[in-house]
Image 1 (cartoon, one colour):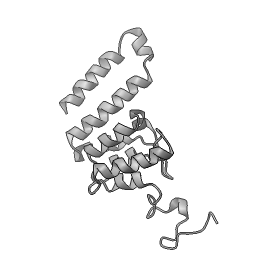
Image 2: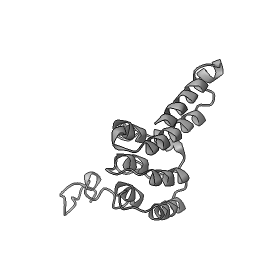
Image 3: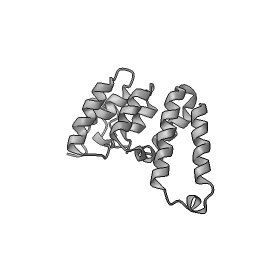
Image 4: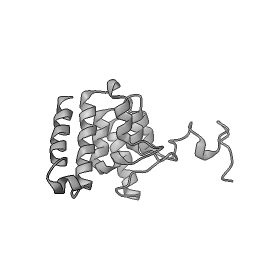
Length: 158
């Protein structure tokens, strides 16, 4: 029965936040970032990619491992770099519950290291430039290249 309630929480399965990551080991490792090793994350990603290459799994709220890591109590740069090794940077632009992973880091900028901020913004900028190479500002010869340089300088200054 798809409406059966979880015996522990009493919630329908799709709304059961206590067991939210039980079938999403990559998400679980990202959520528990303070105790996760890079090797554990790599192994979980390798297993998932053997089943579904490229596309990161999304939980019932549409969140990718990037969303979970960047909203976790202890987001770590080394784990973010592992995710970026295995998934394309455009994932940083995927929305879940109206937010991109990059939005979580923007609202918590004062709680994370400047290295983590730089890594997120660089990957996000590269992704934006790669997905929009023929943007009208690029075709006009103004705006986008100087904007990219300005944003790169700002990221380097953090």
